[in-house]
Image (cartoon, rainbow, N blue to C red; front, side, top):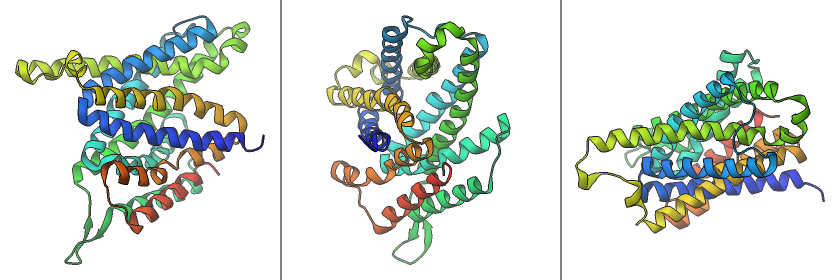
Length: 316
């Protein structure tokens, strides 16, 4: 069957669209911190079960201190800081615009990789950054009824969106460093059995960091609240809609979505797969209109398309 990788890549974009919409619902129902404690705990559990089934180890076997250090740092930056910003952007400006700002993640990844590991920052990457920023600007800037030019989104939401993209970009580079270390620590005779599942073992370590940070921060926040105002895991069990949305977000995002994204690059070029998977800001337009009644304008569609074109330039 032709175009298997391309079809899987589009499927991943659809999964990440579902994850974004479900995360917005879950964040509103459960709160960002309670939702993410559940999310990290379940992602950790699913990852452990998966690698246990296929490698015989329910943990990242053979990973040494430097691997854990880099991947824990990645979890703090990506899963804690980045996702905290992302889910707050969903609450402030909606998942549609939150995903639009996430198209900046490749730009932050390129800048961080240039600064930390010396990867070349080509003119094509710089052009891609400019085009991606232009697409976001087209979507969020406009004229009001008095024909004043300005930003149509709250500043707090924009900062959350930028923080989410920055967290994912930096977290990805830290993950690469940790995964490279991990690959050197697996015995050669075991590599054939474990190579395909090293990313899942690495993600498990990142989930450990995310779970610890969210749980610790939730505990500290509750110390400052009155007993009746505290956000608890037990209390969240009453929010059936929120729990279902959270489970849907976990399955479609950090678990199944990540797995199929790894599969996509096995069947097609990484650049093609990455570009197709980056179409979430376009795919999310209609569902966000149906679910949350967010108005769609020609400017919104044009901005999303321009941003995706900018992202594609990073991988061509």
